[in-house]
Amino acid sequence: MSFVPRRLLVLTLLAPLLLQAAPAPWYYWRSLVDGQRVCAQTSPGPGWEQDSAPHEGPGCQPRRKVLVVPMR
Image (spheres, rainbow, N blue to C red):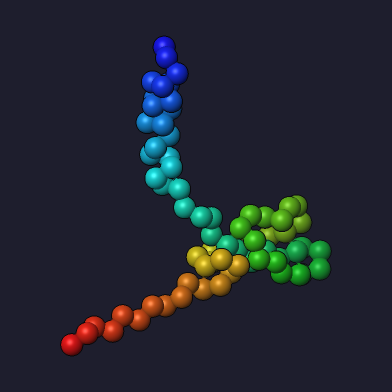
């Protein structure tokens, strides 16, 4: 089997996974030790629990609302 068809086969198999990729949501995490809150996409480690619903914007910022004003 030549090198080019192998690449094509791998790309064909991975394409559906790449098309579904999206950034991970951001969460507030609370320390079980001192109650400190941190914003991160994944858990900072043991001793932390999720403390909010997912945020779609980066850094726990809410998604911007865009107002569309129709032209007359």
